[in-house]
Length: 323
Image (cartoon, one colour):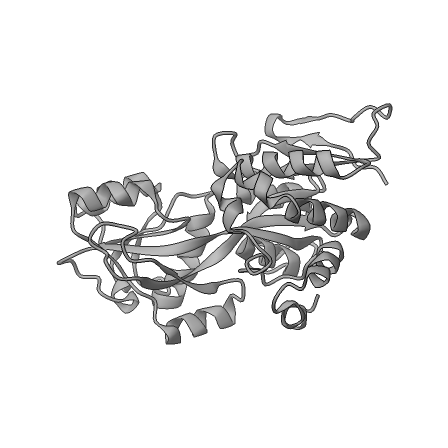
């Protein structure tokens, strides 16, 4: 089986010459080359290329996670970085991908979590998630995955009963500091540099998400999972903040052969120490974390390897996702 590698970042399709040694060519969609997901994708590609015969994997620069899902659904990429919510909606053809063909994109591996930050200032009107009703709320910029998560949260809390500001995190922080919004929402890996900057200038607080609200949210959106932002992550926030998050990880086309995905998954897990030298997120990746946040079924090749190494909760995961 052969795959055509497409350089989506520059709008060109390039067919790899058949004289090369590889039998298969796979591309991993990432993000602009300056972002962390490109570093992850490049490191994984290198490990696979050095340790799996007959395949050539390339990390591709793209416009980001939302673009990646579209490229995969269009058959232009075989794998990509994505959040687990986008992966779930694409697999099930729901939410933002309700018009897509279901079952084309499958879970592969979770790399690092992203945590929902609900950011407010001490002395301000926001002390709980319910207080966001009717308020001015920073949501993240259009086209970004964090804005999609903010949409889900605010729809659950307030319906349309709030004033959204759809701007980048840095702009939201400035607006919050200047009193032009009441709260900012951002789903990202902590610590977030703009929030560190805000904490140095103003007394901030992170709003906790209680168990009852989270249970209701997860019932509607299974990829969300419970986690906390540790105390001391940001100045003035001494205790841990219960919240929730998503997996920041890899998804893969259902069309990639099972044995090939098994071999690639095995190569990654057997070289996590090497990958930790590429980015510290890999030092925290293990069989205990690889399923975190996924609500869509695993590719059969990944499932085969995870069963082989005894990933905790793997059979419960299969039963829950229908994989």
